Image 1: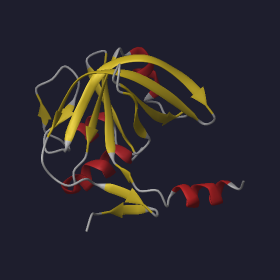
Image 2: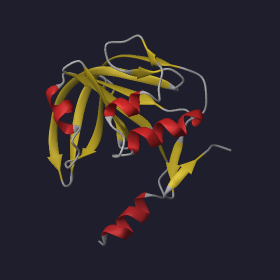
Image 3: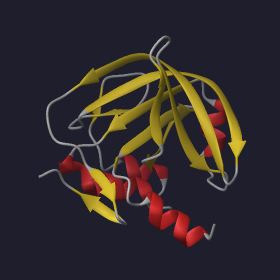
Length: 155
């Protein structure tokens, strides 16, 4: 299948937007991802994916913890900040207010999950990370969605 056709077809599937975070050597790291899903309820396991070429992989592979921030419709600018490879990690985190937590979790989102890394593996041009969820919290609001090559909203 042609890459552009595959991308267009998959783009028909609406996904929520998250920012995945970790800390390594006392520095916060994060990236925007819609490649996040729950894998198991017992135990609570999730997965997310990151391009193999991303410099952020080193932090995620060295870290034992992760945070998944589920973005609200009001957080489009945050999604863009964490998606841009032009922004340093420091510049990305200047865009958010953090809640007290060992792993960076954002104020104003729909919720967050935190946990411990289980494993990672290369699949095609991405690395798939698996993590066991140990904590989380839910907040009110509407999700920031992505489909058809752009942000979407409910309703």
